[in-house]
Amino acid sequence: MSGDNKVLPRVLVVLPESGPTKELVAFLGHGGFDVMWAREGQSGYETIDSEVPDGLIADLRDSRIDGLRLLQVARQRNPEVCAILVGGPAEIELGVEAMRQGAYDFQVQPLNLAKVRAVLDRGISHQRLVGEVTSLQRRLEERFRLGGIERRSSRWQRIYSQIEQVARSKASVLITGETGAGKGEVAKAIHQQSRRRESPFVEINCGALPEGIVESELFGHERGAFTGAAAARKGRFELADGGTLFLDEVGDLSLATQVKLLRAIQNGEFERVGGTQTRKVDVRIIAATNRNLAEMVEQGAYRADLFYRLQVVAIEVPPLRECPDDIPVLVDMFIHQFAHENGVQITGLTPEALDALMAYEWPGNVRELKNCIEGMVVMGPRQGLLKVGDIPGHLRRKPPEAVGLFFRPGMTLSGLERAAIEETLKAVNHDRRQAARLLGIGLSTLYRKEKEYGLRP
Image (tube, rainbow, N blue to C red; front, side):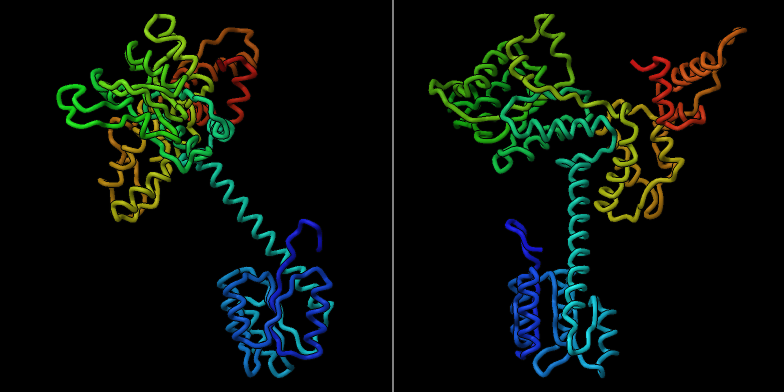
């Protein structure tokens, strides 16, 4: 169990000083354990307060040692501690009670050192396995809920990988996707995973501000720069110095503002509105847009140099309708959030209600889904499950009517299958989950058949 870089398992021995105890301590020390020896109970408590032992060997009952109490204190510090309590033949019943309370073993004096070693090895190995499982669960939770984003679909798993990779760099990032799809959450996740996580994350919605004040919001202004500027004010670039500046809806900026933004991004330099002093900042830029900037560049509505400077790394956030596997996860998260906020005991959805939500297109994406669930929780029952009737009427979509297929003599079975899949997908507006349900096949089978027949774009 020893090794140059390995941390030795730590065992606390709480036994009175005696020849057998010294032999036990020496045996454990030579066996690869880091041994701490407390000769009476109070020293044992003090050691547990300052050190978290992996193993505990204690007298069950001595004039100055209460083994059951030591066991309880040790398990508070380490619930998986490998505890061996020691006593005489008359204390076997109490030893059995100790094992009920979490001890690994009860041994009668004189101790069998080989047996002690075997119990410690088994218990500490189990303890480390539990720790590895807990660590794995924590990493999985972080993986599936990165920066507040909780998704399961394969497309979002790819986005998680992109976030982790780009976060380590200083590169500018352009996040594209429909309104409400989660671009802002991706931007925050990048910042939280970066070396700048302890510095400010400042955001500005470029499309929500009138043209006349965008420049002031970005770069700040000096006193008297314009009517109403009674005092000097820092802009978002200065506020984000050392951290991250998130420019949301960056496609809505005017050409004049784009010129000044490009200079600030390239050189980290700018002047406040109404000022002459050149200021310098260190800011990492993350931008987002729901517009096609490449097309805008071709049309002359967006500067090509700014576009290329923003899009050093590009991350595309898919719409919710293309990630149906995420809907149950998001629904569950939002139900628990809003049930807690509103003090109700809503625990979930009926299967029929979930099917109805899965069948909807969600043009407003995650934002629309979140608002929908909040309304359902607020207006629904005080406890239990939400039902189809709790879903707003305009969101309930009737199942598609049967579609007649075109048959001709001599069509192969594969041709019929291809036609059935193609027409069903058209009928449900390419809702693959609903199409798979209507066709009576699994979702993975549908994906495979689409690829086989060349039906996927």
